[in-house]
Length: 254
Length: 99
Image 1 (cartoon, rainbow over the protein chains, first blue to last red):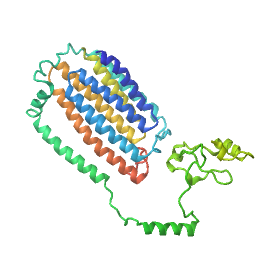
Image 2 (cartoon, rainbow over the protein chains, first blue to last red):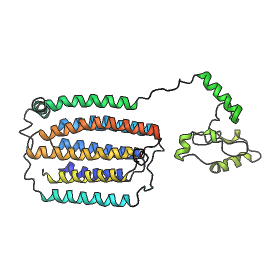
Image 3 (cartoon, rainbow over the protein chains, first blue to last red):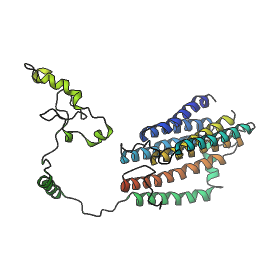
Image 4 (cartoon, each protein chain N blue to C red):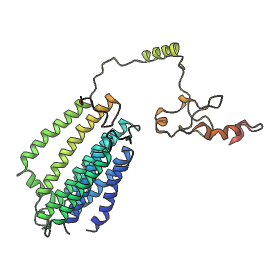
């Protein structure tokens, strides 16, 4: 019971955090905390097999799948705060709270009696006993599960597969495209400028500076710009002024 | 060890999951909240299994986990397909079947 009273507040807080986390990655990590705590609660309640399955299947496989999809979908897929239906958020919270209150009050009024415990049911050990039931009474359900898993695997492959409709561009095609861009739009032919041209700012979030002191757009990654973590040019203006001062050169800076 | 606190915790987690499904707009987070609801029901199943002294509840929880794994695979593939065509993971943007 000690484990329950320690883990229950942690789980509730983490689950509430999922509601308020702006980024999907944060929600996934909070969900991982909830799932591992649930696994410990399974262990406390004499279910060591489900403890292992919960850790391996849920936190190991399903959450990693979630994180993969979050990475594929990208960082700019954060939640919009605009309500599409007016009052929708308020009413859904009210409906959810009413549902939860009914559920909790109803459960609290039922007396479940004293728990019998699994000591008798687990007399050969939890896993042999589960196998005994699974392969006798529930064997048909177990077989049907295999059909479900095959269908799910096939469905995922069909959905995630993409036919290539156009031939893959070769290096010659890319070079020709680059020259065409140069001829028509005047795009720079060579590689993009590297970020961070100063000795003290060589991180990728510092834009390179053009001769007139403005930041070069092409020198920073598009993803960093979307995240808004790019250092602005005015923030490094003091360093530029220092370099401009007579008598001090870039060599003496270190 | 009493039964009621576990069931109340399960009800609270289920409620939080359902509120998340109703309020969040990002399809991935909505999916995570569905997983939270499945986990909450698993906790209730295992608690009842201990309260009744037989292993049927644990078998049911095991089947719920199997179905959840299959559901997540297909669901995330659908979300990725929608993202690929619409460049958005918001549930509001997938409204082509509305009219």
